[in-house]
Image (cartoon, rainbow, N blue to C red):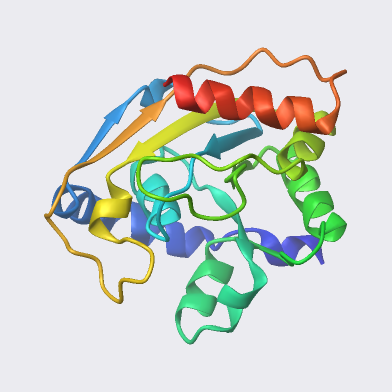
Length: 202
């Protein structure tokens, strides 16, 4: 049921109390936090360099973010339980997962904040991958505001292949842009590429 993908309010209340510790520990610097709407449904579209990215964004966001996450993560002990409680939406990566996109669309219409990585998977340090068309489909089916986000530094602290994050090795910067003016009559690929370009420009 759709309700299964709503976050735990009790869990997030506790998280919001302790997250300042993690923000200080990870040396997270944020610009443009005021661009995230506090109540309306929205889509945060961010570049992706590290598995630390969703954690970082939920550390600085003024509201809970429901991320679309690969289905395999839900089977990892403890992590799977945590991301389910955080309202993550499982996505099958081998094909376009229409059911996951439908859930994200409905949640955005319900006023939730959806987090998505247009690249689909982590890019190499300092690089960007070609965006997938799924984000264009998601955006075209909802009137929710689309907020571009650029994260730098997480790939230094927790690069691909690393078992544990190297806390304190580098600061993390998060730049949050203003809501995008998107022509939703464009095809899915054009929308995805437009969003990705705006992320790069931040």
